[in-house]
Length: 291
Image (cartoon, rainbow, N blue to C red; front, side):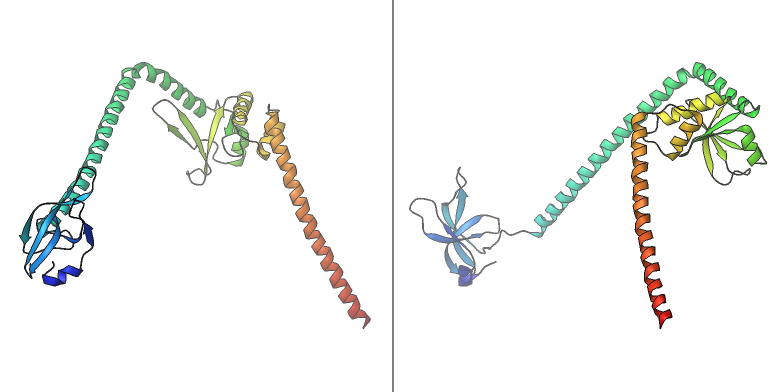
């Protein structure tokens, strides 16, 4: 707040835009937030001012009757009540956005839950027919496994291979009995074979087959689904006479050639280093023997 003649040197200047009133005047704010031009300082607690208005073009001008005030301010004054009201308004707006987002999230979850329930009801309505076919296939596969009708197994790994029941029994005294079967409610089953009889060690997915021809067919399907070939792919192609994609094979063979050339060049550099070391040491040894 400004008092007396001190106030005359603390503010910028305003040029009145009203005709006949173009002299430079200092502007301030009153306690009720009016922007005013200081006309005259009467004493330390009384100021003669005139209010500033804005025309349609956004330009400021001095207008209205002159009046006196007890205090003027360089900046628009802000009371404690107004400050707190602004803070509450900001808090309210933040909470409003927060709970609006929460409401939208709950509405989406509600709609999704309803849709999930509808899907389950549709599934249950056809469960009798669906489960009868699925159950038959499930128990048939389990029976084939337990009764020993599956003779070959395709290990579904990075390096897929076919293993016969006899080969497995020769490498595992416990035989091929400890497996885990993972299933979904759509009838899908996944077989996993454990490394040890107690279920410890690594586990591998496998596809059980009744014949070697069926196993080769599974291996062929696995090869067809590969984006690129590996050394294991080439091994199975040659071993089981699988059909292969020529373009994928070209890419694989070229990659093998490039890797072999790189290894050859690295080996040559290393060998040259050894040859140079042998020569240098031999020359030094020869020099020592002649002294």
